[in-house]
Every structure is written in structure tokens, then in C-alpha cells.
Image (cartoon, rainbow, N blue to C red):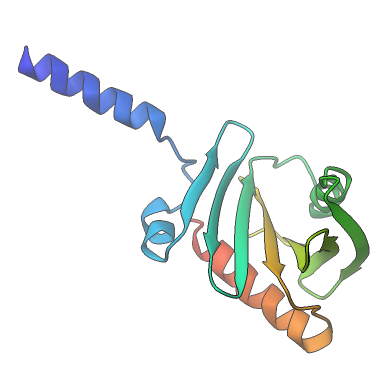
Length: 151
């Protein structure tokens, strides 16, 4: 009887946390990220510091292009944010939004996906109005970190 109960608890535990096979959940939790969504259509993680908040979304949409993912983020933005601009650098499509209370939200979608299983989208929130080299540095560091969680 004890073995049956133990088996049921193990099965229920595994079914409630079934992260995609392409994400290294041990690594992301070791660096302070929390899982914020674990659905069939999206797996997302987030982390908040004193100066920024980062949310990384993994979309299992291999049939979509990076540009289509970026456009989908833009069209699904909540009413509380105001779209400011769209740009790109050599590595990513970049969207910039102003938040109603204060600060900015940037979205980065890499042009070339590291995994064929999913697309990555990074939401980076800060009080700083980033541009030029500062923005490129944040794009690179955010995408490097996001891609490091892929197996």
C-alpha cells in the first residue's frame, strides 16, 4: 500500500511540472529564475532585481519565423503599455514600449533560433530609456542568458 501511495505522489508531482524537453530547468532555477507559465503553448520564466525585471518565454512554434513571433508580441501587448518603436540589430528584432506608471519594456526575439524546437522572446523591463550600444549590450546579455537554458 505504501508503494502505491508513493507511486501516485510521484506521478502527480511529475505531471504538475512537465517542462519542455528542450529547457534545462535545473540551470534556470540555480540562477534565480522562477517558472511563471508551463502550458502547452508557452513555457515562461521570470526574475526581478532592483534595477530590472526579465521574463523569458519559450514558444514551441517551429513553423513560425522570428519576425512573426515579434509581430505577435507587438499585436498582443496589453493596453497599459504604449508602443514606441520597432527596430532590429544584427542579432534580434527589438520592440520598445513605455509603461503607464514609469519605465520601459523591451522585447527581444532572436533572428536566428538556437533550437529548432522553439522560439525565444525576452521581455526586459527597466526605468532606463536604452538606445545604441547600451541597448545592444542588454540584447546580447539577455539573449545569451535565455539561450543558455536550452539543452
